[in-house]
Length: 92
Image (spheres, rainbow, N blue to C red):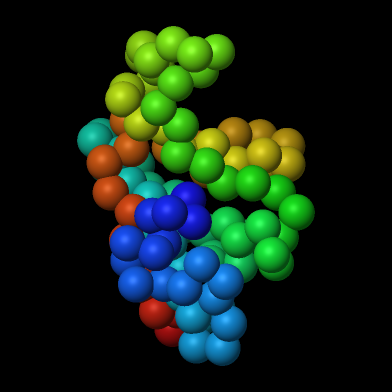
């Protein structure tokens, strides 16, 4: 996820105003999940949020070509299958 943040002009080690950003991950069917920048940064948060393109060395099947996965959550409610976009938005 950090590699994607850098492509969105968010520093790899966000601070200050960048910590007020939320990431909106959307799937091809319209489902969306929100993460704060701090939640996806290993310098700030213990859990990991990754964009996966394979599992056990094999391409993802029913979950689409990309899947957003978060470790440390008791339910995978914010995991996004068939991931198509990730947008960085300023928190209001």
